[in-house]
View (cartoon, helix red, strand yellow):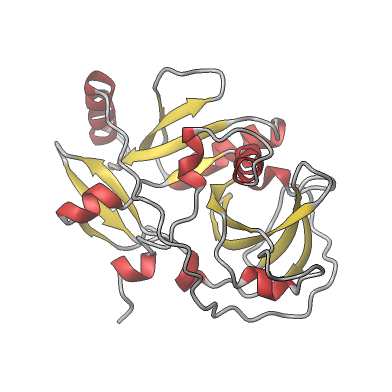
Length: 261
């Protein structure tokens, strides 16, 4: 598989190639453990079997480039009901740089406060997280389960390098609402055909014309990027177009593209 990488200090397009998602996420996990404030976004562009097929398709993209898949406009702020259930909240002890599906954690918001995050799924060395803001009509202190039932403001695939004291601290567990929150993805190009896949990557099929234009590619971002994106949503820092990968959208859910039978 290979993707387009964008670093904070570079505007030129780069390509990042790996033999598998497992290898890609392991490489990025090691990079972010070494530097928890690294800033990058990698948008997965295409897949092929390791070997000549992967190299050939990568070289074709090097020569021709690839356009960014347009992102669908945000859906109206309709808050769907959550199916989440929860265990009792209690302090948890986790080794640094580790997190598990269901972990509820707090993130400093840059103003002296904190917001609530939830690990929705694990994918090899990566985690899919959603970050929530307390609704204005819910007075503090808010029941964490009430907050987790709202629509996230930021969600995406990242690495667990900031799960450590003073950064992202786990405070409890709750069953994640995977049906509501996990997205589908697209990959491929017009030349070779666009595919859609479920979140796990276990099911894929050719994309319809509409899906090819609206289902986003899988993007993995550095965890510090998640911090900054949330602060941008909250108005603490300026918004940047690269944060669009992390803006939560209720459309293109994995369960909608691949209904369970």
